[in-house]
Amino acid sequence: MVFTDIIEKKKNGLKLNQEELNFFIDGYVKGIIPDYQVSALLMAIVLKGMDEEETVALTSAMIDSGPRMDLSGIKGFKVDKHSTGGVGDDTTLLVAPLVAACGCKVAKMSGRGLGFTGGTLDKLESIPGFNVFFDNETFIKNVSKVGLSIIGQTQDLVPADKKLYALRDVTGTVQSLPLIASSIMSKKIAMGTDAVVLDVKTGNGALLPALKDSIKLADIMVRIGNAKGLKTAAVVTDMNQPLGNCIGNALSVEEAIHVLKDNIECDIKTVSLTLASKMLILGGICESDSEAMMMLEEKIASGQALVKLAQMIKNQGGDPNVVDDTSILPHAKEQISVCADSSGYVSEIITHEVGSAASLLGAGRMTKEDVIDPAVGIVIKKRLGDYVKKGEELAIFHVNDKKNFEEAVARFKKAYTISKVQPDELPLIYTVIEE
Image (tube, rainbow, N blue to C red):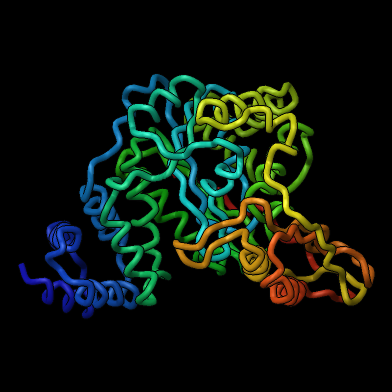
């Protein structure tokens, strides 16, 4: 087989078969096919697309590029959850202990933040002593012991994705539904759980801003998962403003603890309960959304979800007392108010600019080598539709290093549009795709 023939075939809009995609992935992982040829094929895929059968075949080839996780040592139904990324998205910190408290086993590998999106691992590592790296045997023991564990992705899980993602990032080939879907689902399927619920973001802070594209991606991924024997559901949720009010690492952990501890009604709780309910239904714990919601609300009210979070923290080397005393978390030296320059309603928030402002403070990384400051970030005081007076707080910046402070403030203020007319309320959850 000649790789240039495969490039030409896709360039002409023709369908690639499983054998050709296996040849592509296997050759690239082994270093036989060079980056420049793979870049040409990726661009052809971006321009010409792939149908569902091709996307499933590409996902299969990527899964087979490395060993799968064997979670058979964990008794009970094993569920996973994935988000396509956003700002102020702390749902994993809520969903995982909630679902575990209801009896499902949550075995999850998470990533670090890059750009304006937050990383679950970075947030968890802000808890003193928390360890996100274990071998597979210890990971399985941890899930079996407390019902949940969240760790970093192992180096040998879907090695094709690591190489392809790095290449896509520098060749303008990130925005492709088949490539995004195969990247996400190859890792979820190789993870070895029984089911996964996908949180697909849409809006100006999402990977895919257009609602139609987000729904299409969700549908493709659900079809791939079910075709490969992984029970899959997807929830399309809004990212036209930060989901939570806290953008950072320790700040996000603190917010999640307060939601579980004080039963605060907020957007992040609503989305988390929706995701968790779908996980319980796929896991056979509940038969309906209403039954699942009642069970989840009870786990918050009784404190059992918070206890489960503390158990996970302790089991992974962290200080479990943090759930009762958040002062244990790192805190920034200064808290500086950022105020509105005019009066009116918050009519638009450019979400990725808010995330970029937090990154400039040190809460995120623009390259994989950047070091994150776990203490810094932004606490939002005004959300879409809120009325604000001139001089009133829009947010509080938690700051250690003022090197980029002025630029961060400028970006944040630019992200907010204040108008005389109150905007229409946007849906928080647009649709659910279950089959």
